[in-house]
Image (tube, rainbow, N blue to C red):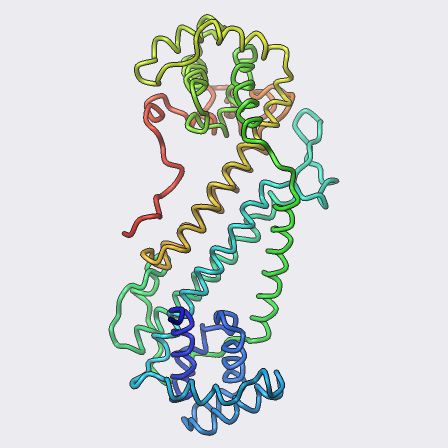
Length: 436
């Protein structure tokens, strides 16, 4: 049984060979790189080379032109001229090229969106080439700023926007070609309200050479990101959990660091009884209550019915005493990197699942990609804005809230935590694993 994408591609090309005038309905938005099969890509490129010939509507002349271009480009064995007659023979009886081309584009968008996941993963891996890049901290210190963190939005965002524009054009063309306007899931429902071009009127021609350069560049960047992910240092999950638990215990002895850590470490990302400890710290800090081991243990006991039980008090006191000897700044940096890596992995998995879910519209898939990129970029920005080794209030207004001389401090990113909100689990994002 043929793959549905292959069937759609063959139907598109068969329709364009049988009724060449329909090339004008797809040539403005369907790109050669949207075809998954390389031979189909070459056929479509050949069609785009002679749009004037296609407008004459002669199937024989068009097929002969495509055959000649394929032989010149690929040589005779790979060109496979007899297969062109198979495409013509198998063309649908009443072909509407725009309908089948929209299917080809949808499959292409899903492939490209799934491919963006590797850039999200690479965003959590420092780029060795950027080891010299430094960002000055308010204290005068410098800290390495991974190049990949700066470029994740620059890599993913434009691709999502470009795919959204391309899909909106396809929806308008499909509405005009079929005469049945409907929302095909374009971002912002652009297609439902768009005005199109009548069937048979040229809407422009995609630049095949530019499309090839764009595709080559995207593949090069994907290879670089994939190499960074595969060669990046591995992190044992048990070590990551241990560091997280040590940091939370150390915060009891360093309550001045709570605000900065709360900017990026959410309670639902803390596992086991340690989550109750962290939520107790956040509650005491929000209430501006004094923080010490005994107060924290009592707060855990007092709120155990809502937050769940914490560790045994004696065990908790022993953890706090041991963590007091650790370098809280180094622990903060370690846990921040682990958190970013976990966020990137979670969003990448969600993005792949959304792209593979046929029950989601293209608009939903692109929305999921945009949300995933924003989630990783926002996590990276929150972590990068958390200074290491300086007072969080005096040195970092973004992490601790800007103090006004005439009024109290305004809530900052750390203030996003609210006790009532986190008594129940909070989803990391929209659930795109179900059919809407």
